[in-house]
Image 1 (cartoon, rainbow, N blue to C red):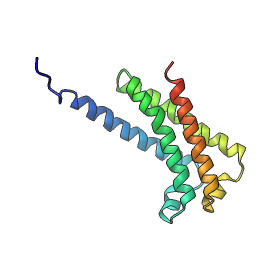
Image 2 (cartoon, helix red, strand yellow):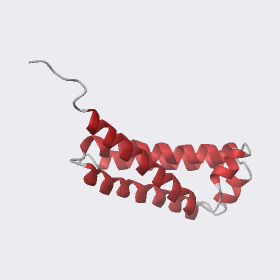
Image 3 (spheres, rainbow, N blue to C red):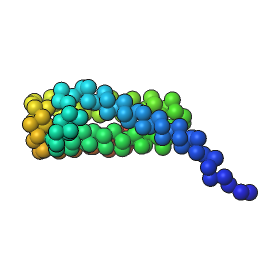
Image 4 (cartoon, rainbow, N blue to C red):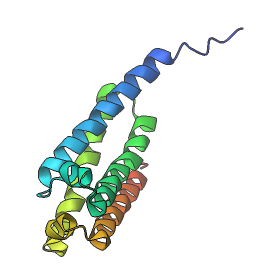
Length: 134
């Protein structure tokens, strides 16, 4: 029996396209929640904003990859992606409560605060991914 390696290409395209769209949705919503404007700050060379947004993106992508692997279909994937999104935004809100003035420090280019926020996001993502395996 000969295997056609491209027979799963439509599924790949559907999942990849959906995952890119859901990641873009996460980034859009995340940047709406934060009081600082990451994209504008990044355009001006603000490393703290770049670090913190990169951490949030990675913190979303880690559990989202787990979701993609384990999902039964695209709807299942989208529902669990929303769970991942809520956890990441929740992690940011907790960080903001724990460190008042966090956004002002990021706006000022304080890379220490941007790095801590990135670490919180990645940590939340790793824990989120681990908890989704049960």
